[in-house]
Image 1 (cartoon, one colour):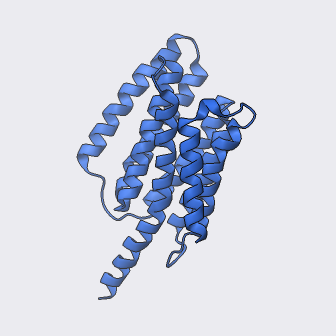
Image 2 (image 1 turned 90 degrees about the vertical axis):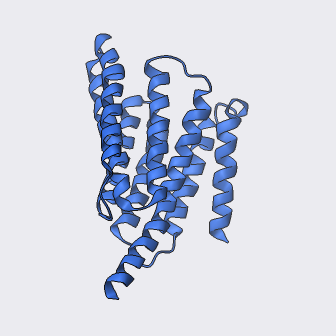
Image 3 (image 1 turned 60 degrees about the horizontal axis):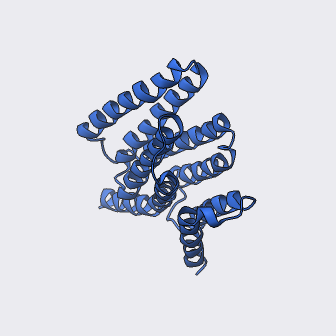
Length: 220
């Protein structure tokens, strides 16, 4: 029952923040932004699993760092740093599973996509003389693409969907912030962001089932 209530609160407040952002009083915008993530973190810790594996803990901690990143993103480099650490926890979570290899086409696509984004965005920042921000953005691109890369190792479709949505969200955010205004940027960024975090939370349950089935087959 508690999980159902938390899920309803997550979707209700999350969708309200995404689509009715302009109607929220400026003093409450951060509250409405953070509440869906707080509910999601509680959901992660309430998730019933056979064994509280490293995957369970690493995903849960990653959610916490991203929530802190949500708040500190108003000081961009600080917020970026918290998100970067959150992604590192996700990477370690994905690497702890080692269920399967990442397909070659995924590796090639992410490598090309990363190269284009670094050349375009970081290159533009360097031309403007902002070397520190260019380095920070480059590091972040490398880490989030590694997160997407390693999500395929889990065998969890929820982990892959979550990682893909996160890359989409951060891509729109970066383009909107550094290159040009993106139409409906707030909706695109936050809808894919909340979706990413929700699917990453769900991947805890899916990976628990995958690992349990693997153990049963090994016993047989």
